[in-house]
Length: 200
Image (cartoon, rainbow, N blue to C red; front, side, top):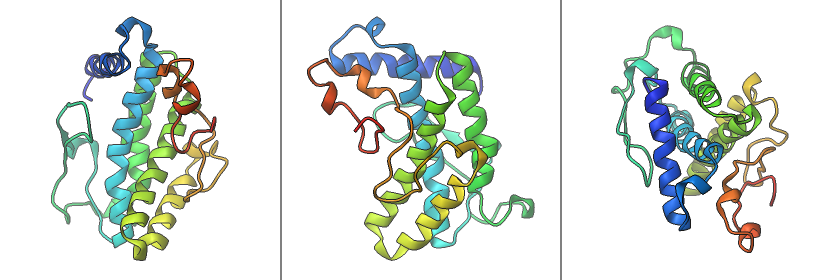
């Protein structure tokens, strides 16, 4: 996102998509719910590549100035990054912590500045995204489970994620709600929670 305006447009587009799926007018979808869902989708897309790459010993250039993406809805955001080998030496042993600091933290702050939404909710989204990425790798490549969970734990050690009360792993539960349950009807609300939801 290159401006608050484009981020607002993204959130409104997510709001409209959520409303359509729920069969409700967009005005009935709280803007903070749409903001949380938009944020979760973006940070999941940004964090999955470095978490997976860390498990295989590869390094990726995920500096914000080098990222190209397509603003589409309905699945993983199409993302393009430079070919491996272009990272500066100052980027550290692996890029995950730098992505948190230079890409995810500014995006999270921008969302928080756009609508009234708790930072705890947003950083819970980040923890969920990290755990989800590691879980996908561990499920599909069991031989990489050790290194991918270690990479996830390294990210969880960040001060940004100090609120996470559980370590990453298959039984992870986030310590805040992403708010998606608010879209479900009253009768379906008990089922309208995510797999790692604090409400489950």
